[in-house]
Length: 265
Figure (tube, helix red, strand yellow):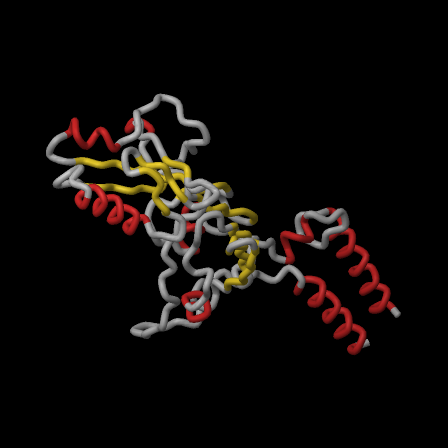
């Protein structure tokens, strides 16, 4: 009789173990006052089809305006969440398939593969070297560089780069953090690199692994996908074994009936 009771309790424990609480503590391996070697910053490099704004200013506004695109009230393909203020009415350059932009007066300028600060310096140098503007101030900003956050987050969507270095933690914060059903130990990142798509897995529970990951700093067009944990995945199944589903309680009732039969015997 005692063995049967032990067996019954073991079966009940096994059933409820599938509903164990997931680990949701970030950086659980890190303590106080630790030094960690981080992944080197990945600078954003401009690519074909990226859009950038370029504004030239100087002591002579009429002269500097010659090097700024005309302001237009309607801009095709401009995201509502662009880092540029809509009220500023700034026109943008689209980088062509060869990696160039057509800049007023200066003509074609190669920008693909460059950082925005480098593009600004190249334009400034050309304006000064050709005696076009003596004291130019050139500002380059991103207009459509975005990343996507999908899956088990509170606010999935497409988000823009508001600075040069965005980490995966910044991205998840913008998306409202993971839901309780998200897998924190296996976040998926897909990235465009040339003509290839590379994939990475990021473990948010391990701080050292996270900070050294190539996917810690995001690039334009990255896709961050948070997979559902086992509990959440079972909720999508018709016969999902979870405490919110009727099949779960049917299984419990069946198990208890079997236990009662064992005890009676």
